Image 1: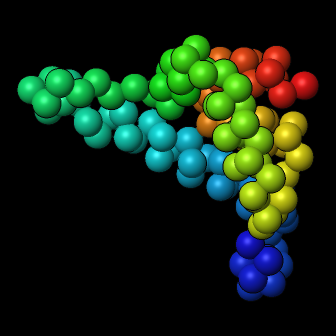
Image 2 (image 1 turned 120 degrees about the vertical axis):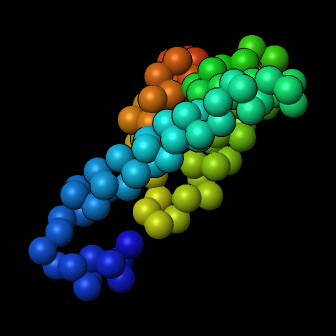
Length: 107
């Protein structure tokens, strides 16, 4: 990100972060849309939004999922994020239910 900011001084950090969030959200939405039921049903697979998927995992092993989220957050270096910033990023990607559960577990 730092290199990109050097090459594009006309863009602020906030603009770049917002662009990244929008691109991530679009990719998430595309994953569900690009695998229609008529393709997945014969394979006995169901497409799930990431929020639904992780929420299910939380119901099975809340401590493990919260620990994995904490580990992932702590591994972020460019840029580093606090737990709250990390959860806000997930929320911005449409993982609102997951974030609500994780907030209860992580704080």
